[in-house]
Length: 85
DNA sequence: CGTATGACGTGCA
DNA sequence: GTGCACGCCATAC
Image (cartoon, rainbow, N blue to C red):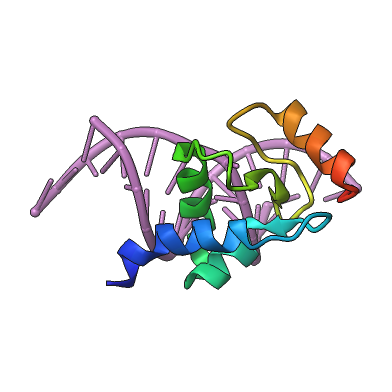
């Protein structure tokens, strides 16, 4: 089942995001296999505590920050520091 | 196995 | 242009 790979795929995709570039949950979900799994992506990332995954580079399709495990402020700070914003 | 929840997305009023 | 509601998929309990 690809379902089991979905979570892993999401982590892989997010880890592959280069600095200075922001991906939307939709894009990540699409690369993960299902563009409608945007909700699942957020849930997986929220459960994920691996700082190795730059989940702060994953924002909403509207450009909103959405949320962050460590705190939205840190997310914005990191994005600003990388020049993504 | 079934239910409930979620860091979203899109459509309609 | 803004706000509300519904829908979709995956995970966790």
